[in-house]
Length: 294
Image 1 (cartoon, one colour):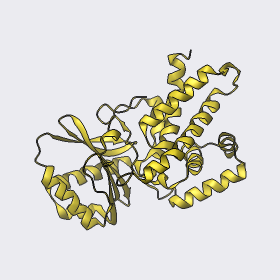
Image 2 (image 1 turned 120 degrees about the vertical axis):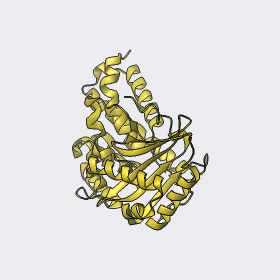
Image 3 (image 1 turned 90 degrees about the vertical axis):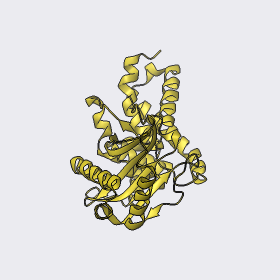
């Protein structure tokens, strides 16, 4: 039987791979549980590189999951958004796994990729795997993996130097605080100044709670939508609004009667908000209050 030390040693990395692949915390936990269970039942003492073996197993299980999940997401009511990963206290040993390359905006963008494209992109860009190792994990030729990563980057229009991954966290927090203040005080002018002309807001209710089924586009419509929500709910004494760490960046958590109701994430470019992600589906807010614990 695997001991607790083994579990704690390997889980953070395995979870980071599975979560970046699937976009859900619950499925990531299930995948890791199944992989470790199979590993325990196998002749694992014969495996030369345990870490590499487990990473390969988790990656391929995640690919299988995504293949089956794509059909369900195609009939999902409204935009399908990833489950936000809220962290309250980050262990220094785990902090490296939560750095820039976990941004919520990028996680959402990766929904455009095929399961294999996503695997190659995650392993290469998030974890810096060499192409030989990636080829071994997904069982493809090295040259093929290079073509896959090139294709994935084109789909994502992925450019390191301008990508939201490298937003200064202090500036991001200040902008989110200013956004929250402008929204709650009804300051339309300040709110418009923070939004890019082509700002989009995506709202995920999953058909379980009220949410905008179609993305709202342009900064004027986004601003009016936000202020309309504030006028409707802003005076509700049962609401609690606070800043939290969402996927390694500053986001907003809205609770009602101490229960999570909404998590809001942002994409920032040139000190303006370009995308807003509002996650309201209760099934995706399980860890919102307590935060995820590795």
